[in-house]
Length: 244
Image (cartoon, rainbow, N blue to C red; front, top):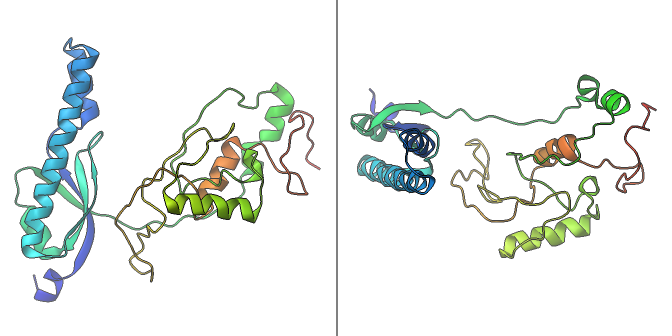
């Protein structure tokens, strides 16, 4: 491979050998182990995978001093996200504990209306089912829990106050609609290498406040109260709604 190509940096997922912690736990349970023993084996496997991930990164840095571990996965497929040169990747590919190296392709998000396809209005009218009592988890860009769609104030000031709390690291207060959340990457995360604000290393924090809007859109579609024309939270009957 030409030197220029060898020096090219890529973002990849490195799959490690062995099972993930979830499979280790399941296998222990199937073998008759107690739940505490199964949890212990899963915990030990997570520690082992993280240790291997660090060893892989350390070896990559022998060829590329700037090689960066972006994340490690331990529960499902054991592996790590790594940004390094092709030369460094060629070296770690020789390790017996590396199963495969796959380029991570950047993806973009967009919002679109799907009301006509979902037919939520018809469902409410015909069955009266609104999802009351159901809990859902959403993995996305976060959630603006100050939005009126979730019973919040729905003001710019409320959002800015929440954002200041997120920046300070102070705990946020869950609401009746948004009962919990976590930011797995941090507010400065940007995985687009073509962006001026490119910053692919996750810096998690405990505040799930949305900095993009897509997660709020998805959460609103999934479980929002709805918003009136004046921006206030909708509190009336869903089955009484009409398309007009």
